[in-house]
Image 1: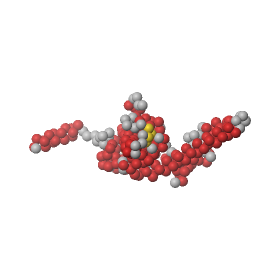
Image 2 (image 1 turned 90 degrees about the vertical axis):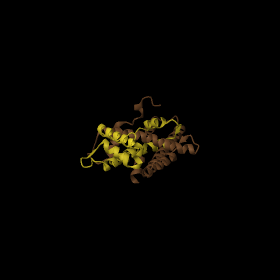
Image 3 (image 1 turned 180 degrees about the vertical axis):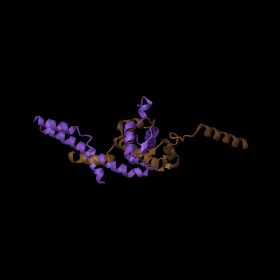
Image 4 (image 1 turned 30 degrees about the vertical axis):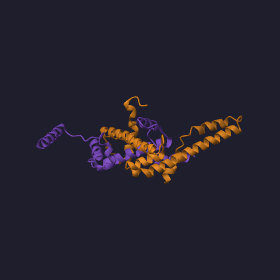
Amino acid sequence: MAERPEDLNLPNAVITRIIKEALPDGVNVSKEARRAISQAASVFVLYATSCANNFAMKAKRKTLNAADVLAAMEEMEFERFLEPLREALEVYKKGKKEVSEQKRKEKEKKETDNDKSREEEDDEERMEEEPEAENDAEEEEVEN
Amino acid sequence: MSANTADKDNNVSTNKNISLPISRVRLIMKSSPDVSNINQEALFLTTKATELFVQYLAVSSFNNGSGKGSKSLSYSDLASTAEEKDTFHFLTDILPKKILAGDYLKTLEQIEDEEADI
């Protein structure tokens, strides 16, 4: 749980970068404006959560899911986000699937040649470092 | 597999999957009293949506704002966007329009006068 009020802020550096990337080059964003956008983003999260939670409650579910969040966007009249969100979700799911398949393969491999070579262990370690494998995911997004 | 995607990634930094920290977004979501569980996908989507929101708010405010010529985005641009655009209306509480104390006092007097008239 949040112990200090600052815990509910989003990191300034990241927010600043997102703003910069969204605006044309060379636009100067005042410090006050950046702070305001950051606070607005936190409020947006809360608002979206509460809308999504209403949908979950209506369906008598205790866990917020993707459909609830998408429904919340519609309710908040951010329909323009729906398409990019759906695309991002596909990519995310795909990435997850690949990671779990990779893990499964590794497991099988481990089971079959359990007492074999050390070189392969290096291999496995390298693969395990990639669970965040969003590289493929990004490619997908570009193509769309 | 990752080698050929790495250079693509440089060209389209805006298409990066997610840049806000998911853990922080979850903390904010969990601070809402009646939320019990959030699944991974919902968390991912909310994080992504927040990024889109930041972009959208910044761009709308810049395009609506007075600083387009001088290439600047100021607080007052944001405050007017919150007030004028329906979708951003929920922000009016945290993005109040700034007014001069003198102007505020005048409005107060006016209201008092009007009330006295009734």
